Figure 1 (cartoon, rainbow, N blue to C red):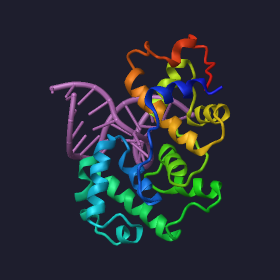
Figure 2: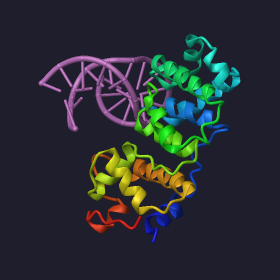
Figure 3: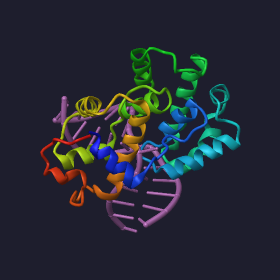
Figure 4: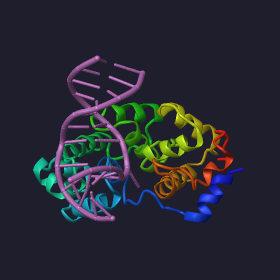
Length: 207
DNA sequence: CCCCAGGATTGCT
DNA sequence: AGCAATCATGGG
């Protein structure tokens, strides 16, 4: 049981995702990290903090151009500044606390926000609101493909949520471990050295 | 010079 | 429903 997780944990340890002081900071990072390296996001977050902008009520009152200056290093800064304003407004409307909302409402409302898709929404649900919600990203998809598991977002998510014990902290680190593993061993070109792949692509993995 | 990064939206078929 | 184009900076 949990054979693969044990292997990954022994190899990579606790990844401590998502480093942030507040749930809002997690949400901001979730927007900024879209199609962007995390190192760039860290710089942008540091900029926002230093400018005292990393609070929902402050950010909503900030001119979009000011925000763009702080987050330029993450690329797509025009859309991302708009998305940050939208999600900051959502936080202020909910008294900066999304943790006590019913999961269904929270999930639906996040997806209604322009700029928040399934992965971003699930990242916020798991890492900011501590909800049992497994995040599927491009790396996770690639690992699944190596193994022989394919499907749309919902199908892949169901697969993980059915096979992994219901524990929020486990979900957080498991997703992080899959990403760091995939980056290192699971390229699109070859998934040879895949320690996950040792079953011979039967699709049956001891998650 | 190329390609990719912890995606989402839009528009076309 | 699926697919490509688009957004844009920074680093290998």
